Length: 358
Image (cartoon, rainbow, N blue to C red):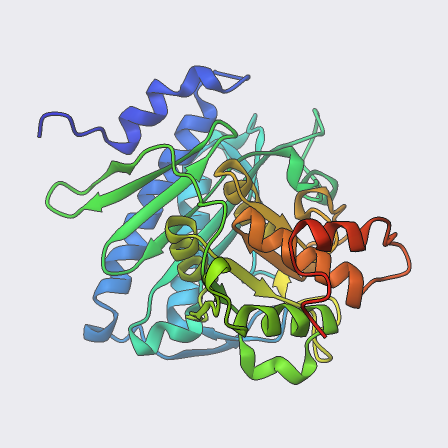
């Protein structure tokens, strides 16, 4: 066991990196880690017990809930309630935010936004699913925290992470001081540091998008896909298409290997489909900390001002060069009135594609 560093040891070791170093954030991350182990246990034995399939309910977005969705949601809320460091949980599975009003949470300073089980439509197929979480420090100083405490820009996050339940279970997180990954060792029941200081390659050859919706994509996305599929040895094109349908799994792969993940607006989802607060903001924070870029196609994700709890957005996230290319094509072919197209042609020339796309 020599040389192994557990998540708990690592959090304590890095506690002084956090400006409010009093231990609350460390304990909060510990609570999330414990709940993720419980969810992991149920995910791994789901086929053996009555926990697969639909729960017969829908969430606020009108999406059918899986039994494991509901179970994971309950486990994370319970862990964050008993931990005492969280005053509000905002989750994809609840209509409204969940205030934590318990004796141990009386002076809690943190807000947690969480997607308890991302990619749950894949559960019955034994495909990798995950948990995404985002942590903010409350703005108000007295009384119960409110919706205003939840509706903070992504730049205000103090920590974010995800857990991927796959062939191995990994927890990846950042507190704004780089990105580190921990793999669950089932023999000792601990997350152990396995991927220190994770960096996403500046470029890649993988693009992840549901091409079945191609006809409904903005023209800028269609142009990017055409670019990705053209043969060009110098830029290693055509790129490889890889789409799992679980945001955590797709982005985790691209973080390690390099690539771009795109979930654009469509005719059916004119504002985008993925949720800003508990999917896009945390993933954007992680990828930026790893050296990548996260955009809605025209603007930085972390700069978007949230106005509602379940706000949706489009997202272009991954290796910097690939996202920059997609942004340039969006600005050229799918601009919006509030976005200036200044220097778009210059940017395309710098990226080496001006004139190369009809």
